[in-house]
Image (spheres, one colour):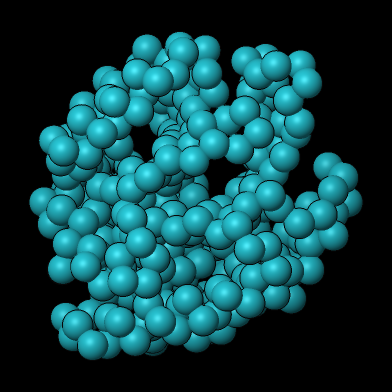
Length: 291
């Protein structure tokens, strides 16, 4: 994939949101022989959502799958960072939605696809249904010299990671050196972005404290349905936009509510992100174009 052709064409054709690419992650911290790679992130698909403000809600995920499959240079892996489905009190319907979501994404040509839950998937049953379809809610994996950590800050209905998972995180990090490159995927932000709107993790500061000794850490998350960038010390946090509808800026109005669909500017507020990570990060946000 070339920096100016394939990615840009992909973004123009996508009709989807919440996509991130990373190429050449942390070259300053990795061995000179470490190969470059890229991955695709999709977030907040909310399968099962219907009605305003997204009249295309039933088809957006299918468009995303088709667009990723059309990439000339397939990503090494794909990650969905939570809220795969839209919440429901009906346990049977929850499983129906998870099943249908899994069927749709099974059409992805890239078979290394990673998942994590959002609160819409897991908070009402502590992740029970999610685990039936996708397995563990938190885990790690390594890819071409980068250590990836998937944290679950949604299965606990109080929006906490929990002491057990924090102990697991601490044990995992003890196996790594301060200069090792680490990428964290989580659904809610680990810092207090706007707790009044549930845009926080109750014990997220404890996770950030565990990550602080490591020099090369970046966090990708979803949940807030918009681009947002935050630093906690030297750790960068980057929110992905959504595949379903945008949310207003934190605290910009009395109550959180989806941004209305604008027929004159369809997909406004939904977009893609191009992320190039080297000695410094380069993030480019591009709008969704109806394809």
